[in-house]
Image 1 (cartoon, each protein chain N blue to C red):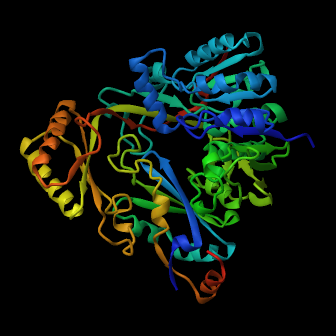
Image 2: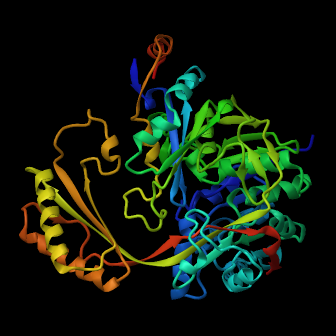
Image 3: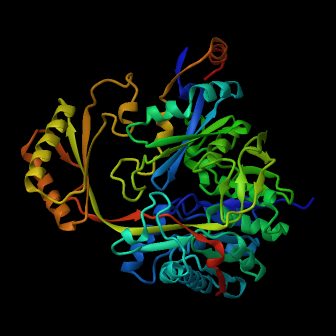
Length: 453
Length: 115
């Protein structure tokens, strides 16, 4: 049996700890560092960013992360695979190349950009080819979108990561490569797994899924027993060691906080799955119901017996469209009778906003401190009057002007009940809303390409 | 004995467009039968009926876990909902408040265990 390949998951989301990846590179004996920057929401945010700065549109945090660890990674022969490229993998790759030059690593770094997932330039062509661009969740036709889509990216698989590694890249930045496919790409390259070895591809997908949320599998967000997690302030990040036969051992950064046990592992396995017998990725339909999860040592969990079936014929498209504006505002009321004061404030504002006759599509009032998150599910035993209540107002409109007018009206509530404190200075501001528009496209219509820098 | 789900299980939730998944895993394999018996799709749908249009349930006996798909709980999705917790991460906590009935044998396991 060949040696297991050790892959560290350096990041759970864009905005996560920029020191964690370097620590994995230096201390965890890894062969690969994988970082997942993208969520459904992230692509929309990057699209917005690109309108302001055409050279942006990627996860800028990749630069400070690599500034910290690129030299060490090159020294230790650790290859880096991430989807920091977002909407602009080429721009991201050029920035990494520039950084390598600055660090004196120019001749030791081969940067690859994986592109092809961005379908915005190709929507008309796809429609001409008979591709159904209807919303797969709501069945609305594409023609319902007055201004069309703002972004559309196919979730693509591991092939282009494998190709980049074959061509000698040691830093790979991609666009919307599916989260677990980043890890699977490294494993396919190292273990020579074929594109139809479904059980192995499924095992690699599970390995990727385990590390794609960073420290969520090492004791962060540990719903089962968060109070028992040691040294959470210095939480370690996950490492999977995956053998050629698909056996996985999950661990974490040595000498770090947090913990890895069967519960943290199962909690992560359950995250964002649908039908567990068919977890669909661009690479495989993985079956989550055949694997065994077993603690084999301190902070070490073994996962075996993963199976898979052929990959889907279509790729999922993550798309977003401009859908008006939204705004929210927070008003803090203090004791005595904080709940009564907040309720009266809502009553006054509802009256005043209605009187203005604004074009507001949806309005929402929350009483934070009185069960705003769990609503009617808040246990009856959670009683007692809070000392403070935050009244939250949120609204959505196609008109920015109407929301701005509503924001002005909110300030009038200082002439209402006493005890109001401003939590965020200034008037609430309306921001653009990008709503989600999922689609499916036949996979053969989405070729990806690899460019080296 | 009636207990909240959180006594015998833990959960994790996340978003997929306007849908949220809530995975619930038994704290001890001995509680998996109670979960599958008590946490039917109908019970969970009723618990979230003010938010979810429908609920599907899937079983993962190998992990002593169930997975629920709550359709429509996030409106048009995490970027456009006006809700607090736009990505439905707190639904995992909410399901742990749901009260279920344990048999005497299951209750005995619970009172003997440290949790």
